Image (cartoon, rainbow, N blue to C red; front, side, top):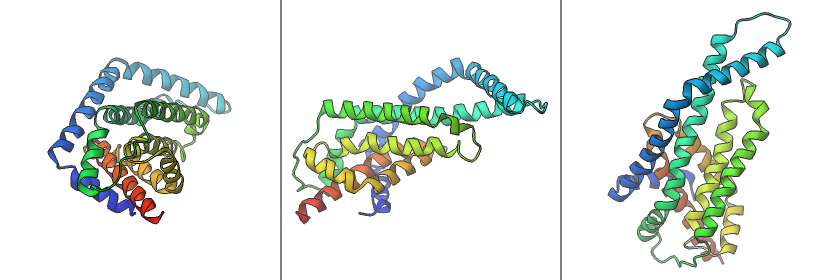
Amino acid sequence: MSIARSLLYGVANLLHPRMLWLMLWPMLIALAIWGTVAIALWVRVATLIASVLQRWLETAMFFANFNLGDATLIAAHVLLFLVFVPLVYLTALFILGIFGMQAMVDHVARRSFPDLERRRGGGVAGSGWNGLVALFGMLGLGILTLPLWLLPPLWPLIPVAILGWGNQRLLRYDALAEHADPAEMARIFRERRGGLYLLGLQLALLAYVPILGLFAPVIFGLAFIYYLLDALQAARQHD
C-alpha cells in the first residue's frame, strides 16, 4: 500500500463536511489552550532559557569574551516555537483520538472497506494506555536527547524525529482497534513499522507549515486509517 496513495486519500476526504468539522474544533481548542499559556509565559520562559544558554556558552567559551545576549534570546524563541507547535497539534491529536477517531474510522470503512470484518481487538482502556505510552515515550526520548539539542546541525532534526515516532504511536492503535484482533494489530504494526514511521514523520514536518498545519491531524488521521485498514484487508486475503 503506497504512502502517497494514503495521503491523497486523506486530502480527498478532507472536504467531506463531517471531516471539515473534525478538522476545526480540536485544533481551535488546542490553540486556545496553548495560546493562553504562551501569552502568559512566553516572554518569561524565553528570558530564562536565554540566560541558561548564555551561562552554558560562557562556561564553554571561557577563553573568549563574547556578548551573546541577542543570539541566545533568538535561540530561546526558536526553541520555544519548536516546542509550541507540536504541543498544539499533539493536543489536537489527543482530542481527535478521544472524540473523533471513531467517526473517521467509520467514514473510511464505510466508503472504502465495507466488507472488512470488525473483530474489535481494542477498546477505550487500550487507547488510553497507548496514549500514555506515546506521551511518556516522547518525553523520555526528549530527555535522553536533550544534550544534542544544543548542537546546531541536530536541534532542528531531533524534535521532528521524536514527533514522527509519537505521531505514529498515537494514531495507529485507534485506526485498527475496531477492525483487527490483538494478534493482527501486533503483526501489522511490526510489518508496517517503516511506513507508519514515514507517515508520522511527514505529519511532524507538515505541522510546522503555516495554514497547512491546521489540516494535518485530520489528513493524517484519515491516511493512517486507510493505510492500516488496507494492510489488514491484504493480510486477511493472504491468510
